[in-house]
Image (cartoon, rainbow, N blue to C red):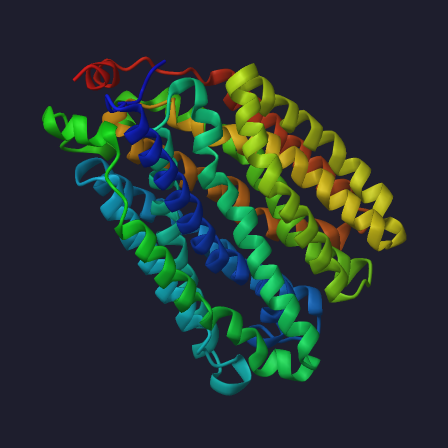
Length: 439
């Protein structure tokens, strides 16, 4: 299926593709730094600062509740920004999504704790987390299209993975900054003001991202659709009425990766510190090492999907993740740092096998004129089913089954849901894309 428009000059096309790759990677990484720094803080400090109580696990559970708000609000961003992306273009919308999440993250750094302002602090935390989610909900679909609509069909898995590298890179930055602060400050200093510096840093990073995206050109596919007058009048309605099967397939295929990522990049911090009684720094180190390796394994998985097919590589990741989660809890019971690093790294490797091909797989489910809206809706709705509730469910299950077996079963079911979505998926040969190619 050829869904790209290539300029006659191959050199020009390749230059545009490289710029799009950098813009997609940089912007998504910065937005995910903002999103991930909240997740790390929720696992380590927010329970104490904003939801104090006698039971540490209960405070963490409440903190993960606000973490989930960032997922619940994503569909709003998917509807609003996805619609705009199909109406006014990918580039313009991506500038606004980056600005929204950057401002929200920066303001979190100023929030007073529960001890300082009572319920005002937690309330504002929830509202700003909601704004973060709206921004991320409109970001992913456009970031994927930046590179996929510049690239050749036979290379789309690799190039579209630029947006997929953003989450581990953002997670790596977030964990790295907080680990540095935690290592340089006393525990009292870190809880009092140190964690805030990680949120203030967002202003600098977002400024850099805005500069990169402002210089980017619009994708060739959207230019062709615009010139032909084929922009949809009601893209959300069109997706819900004409693209139902692709939408369901795209939603289901995301559930497993979201749950697996919630386990090995977010909840593992709570599991290691609260259940295994390991130092905070060791837990962060394990996630950082695994996230760094994902910077290579995700685009590699995208490349493999170009050669062997999206579904095959994706399915191997889903099955592998379902099996590995049982191994993980058995091997980490000894509270050993080397084993924790191996366990998290392997878990995120199987996540990479799903996450690398995911961008191209989902984009290829929808017609070009509805692609931003369809991809965004699939991404955001799946986020609620998978990523939003996963840390909450993990925390609840751990309180009742410290062995982790129940959590492992939950992850395995999520992987099965993903396999169902893959079976339903089918790449669309879109007439508008073909027409745009020869325009």
